[in-house]
Image (cartoon, rainbow, N blue to C red):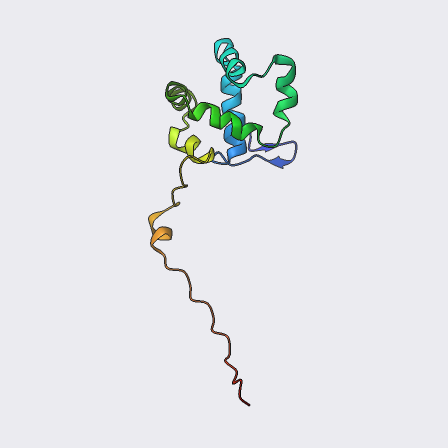
Amino acid sequence: MSDDVAGQEAPRRGDPESLGIQVLHFIVSDVDRIIQFMNVTGLQPETLRESANAPDFLVGVLEYVSKDDELLKLIHKDLGIPPDTILTAAGHLAPRPDNAKQADKKPEPRPQLPRRSMFR
């Protein structure tokens, strides 16, 4: 898969939009999965394309798969995306720190503002 499509940088793998696209492709690649998806969501083939343009559609796709453990396992097996990555992107888990040093790092102190005497 190319990182550059039509001069635009592809979203990162952990980005909810990118994950939603990958998961949607996974769902529509199998007739049984897309039928189940449409039955659960109430979408029809003619409304699916229009719905896909909605701002939160891809997060909704992640929400849909996050409720099905077997589907999460299949996605992990076939796409290599761990379930916790999908759950985090769907908002079910807090994101993990990139590395332990960042989690342990104390915030830098703010510079002190100069004090003024109110009684001058």
